Image (cartoon, rainbow, N blue to C red):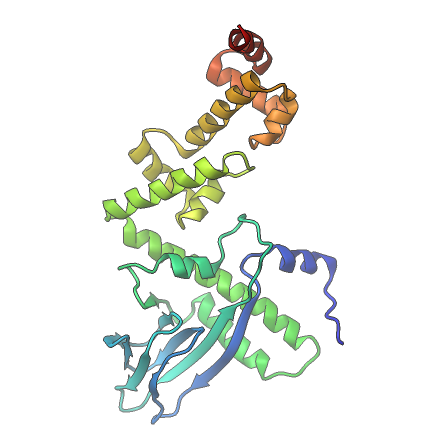
Length: 300
């Protein structure tokens, strides 16, 4: 039985990153003039990058015209085929991939798999399409991965794994930008996302979540998310988060004998001092003063 040894820093990264592991089934370059893809379906994701030429994809019986520097990500179990239209043929890079099951992942980062499943409505349907430049880092990495997979030098397998990890981080960022741009003019969709984020805060405010965690949950940048949240709710997401924490702190202060330092930790604050400062800002009195004043009233 062989054991794969990683440096400690990398072992920690691989254990904690929700982008990993990505399982690459195949990655190939096609440039035969007569090449085409017959109707097929499979249980993994398929990403096709068009380097040269023009073709038509038929995905779930819907035609999709593609050309140079298009990237198509076809979701699992979608019937699809491809017909080359250029007389000189086309050149493609085709990457088939899936995601290994991870049962112990915390929610600190939303994985690409969840993103692909999330944008499954009218915006994307059975596939996702990206337009990139020939010098885009995604394309450069795809070419490097192909070269490295053909190389048998020392460390090639591990280097390939790192490049695949980087590739999917870049893809997730590109998809996130496309997603944000696609909803900016769709107020019902924005409203839906804000409702999802509010529900996320309501269910997780006791954890040490940040603005970045909340924005990432709905696949928006922190700046755009903050503006959209405030427009919809009349309050910033951080203010809403703190308000939920303070309201819960009030309940714990009046209904339990839990130490104030433990209350602070239990509702997502890193230390008692920060909790006390914000509690006083919102209530005009300290947590201890609040407990003495209102716990007495409850007991009476």
